[in-house]
Length: 296
Length: 296
Image (cartoon, rainbow over all chains, first blue to last red):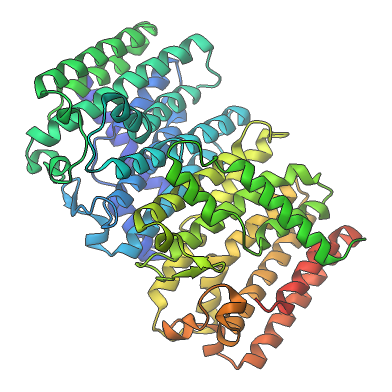
């Protein structure tokens, strides 16, 4: 078996190549919009969500080409949300993935449209002819992604985040926010990856639900730790912004040492769930471990 | 047969009731986001796109309840686009449907999230369990809506519109913009309404394509005429903004009299296409006539 580093690199390259195919070429009108959509989507990013989709696909025996639309659809939703989050009326961030953010490099109107159009593209990719081995499963995947992206998922988490800036949250409130803001899309990545293989039995689905919930929270705990401890150069985005903006984080509720221990506990729980899939769950386990060990 | 006015009122009420069901209740967290989503979506609007979906459904014999998800999905995309268009970085409009716009009544961050979440909800409604009499047709509908909303449809038209502000466009360039900015979604309303009945034969589809293209342009021509001639009170949105913002319109290319004649010509073409469906196409014909006769 290849190392996780080699597998991850190959998953990232596969994502990059597939996104480059799915995104309209810069020669197609309106050229500037398409150029800006490619600017924010290509050439960077950890591609954690596509990796999760590929790993979940592997866990249930999906052919990797069939997982590509799901992996890219989830990543497109993620990239759109970053583009909108960086706008002045939201987080007002100037740097993303080591480059000027979209509204800085282009302008706010383009950044707004780029995000809007990437969201549409996510659903277009997932509904495209050719990806329907089982149309009923495909409709289920589309419904799952739409729900995860919307007001009872990612957008809802954003709204809670906005409303809680400057407030001291309890742990339960903080986790409610994260389960929506980042957890919903991570869950969608895992379930869509697995559904790309066809229908899921209830036992496998329950394990994947457990796995996603744990790594979603662990990812967020580590994000808070890294935002406080790492440098802007390592992160590729402005560091220390949570504290500067008065945002509630795990580090306002517990010391960094305890936060790291909590992340480890969640990852151990995720590893147990990945174990259900035996050797085929190895990549799910690798990603869970990567989340607590990463430095960016 | 009931009058068009009675039919239109019933279609508007059906849309309002269905949207009120599909939109999350204000009691569901995050409450403020859900309240704002309902604020922009309910209690107003001409509901032209849902009417088109219902009329196209009628033309091919679809059961009206089965057309509701399609009618509402298209309207949700329309409402999200209005909410984002009104933002300061776009048209910076303070009035919409006779009420303060979302970013004025709430704030810009909420208006951004409201638009984002309404787009997701459109796809969620269309992919919801229970609406899949034929999952393959449903995936086709989802693909069609996503394409119409995205960078090669509505968002693309917006980008062209932005880029052309202050420029003198040729008629062909102006129509390229409108075919994308408003035409794509009008076409989606008509085709999704008809597809709600099941598969479409090629002949019927070609007539519906023709019908949509003509009424889409006619609608835009009349919008430009009304923006120049009507009052803010009649329109329910700020009048005269096109000229104030230096936007290319039909009235910068031809006198109002010629624009009205052009709209009539397009509508006559649409009426011929609606004629293909005999008596069942009566509502499509009514809507085409309404477009040139409306005053708001």
